[in-house]
Image (tube, rainbow, N blue to C red; front, side):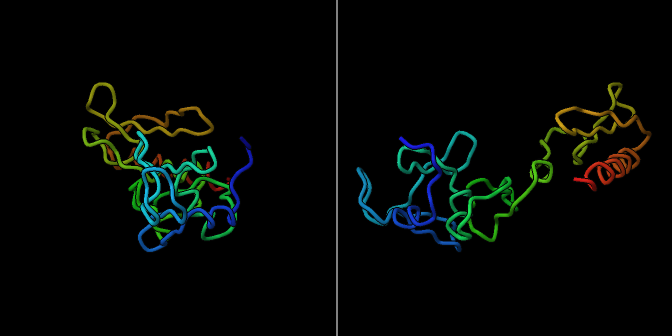
Length: 162
């Protein structure tokens, strides 16, 4: 087994890809699969995974390789937040930070904004930001709007340089 990543030529010899539907289909016959059947299975986390030459790949990364000819140098973000929607128009290169920002807050969260939550006593709002693997508390505020503004101010300063 090789540890080299699959090439675009090898990928295209094994699979077809529809950038409109985001589906990969087999070009070759496989056990328990007819020619042209959909490739890949959903992972526990909701991503489609395809095994090629004994190596498992996430389909959204394969889609990037298939369409551009190069492996993505950063993370691939699903713009609409649907992890199995691998249409090329739904994929974009993203930094770790921007990929993490494109997520849905849990339904039971007190604030719909990332980096803003109720303070421990439940009467005020606190702002925080995660940067370089560390959480930084930005303060406690009287309103959610004030906490959000503090978060946005620090966010723009921290990530303007990156």
